[in-house]
Image (tube, rainbow, N blue to C red):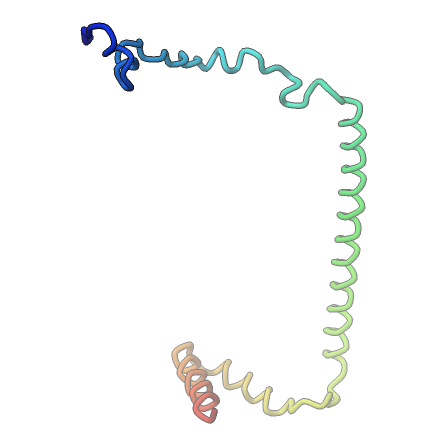
Length: 131
């Protein structure tokens, strides 16, 4: 510490030299931090009745949503089966060039994967080269 005489102690900045440094607050341990935390902090004690009512409502809503999703899925499967059965029994033209698509299907069955890839590359190149 500095030893000064008389009025020099009152100069700005000198007074702070004579004062002890402020003490830092001691760090709290983990046990001290968690000491006051109880069930209410996690919402387990207060409002148990309200929570039970909310859970029942959520369960009912989830059940309804699940039933609705299953119903929609079943309807889609039925529609798909009807379309497939209609396509199997009906050979009439529906506006598309079925001969060309059937030829492509036959060609794809006979081609090896490498040949198929090359043919598709050529088709794409021809398609985008025109633009």
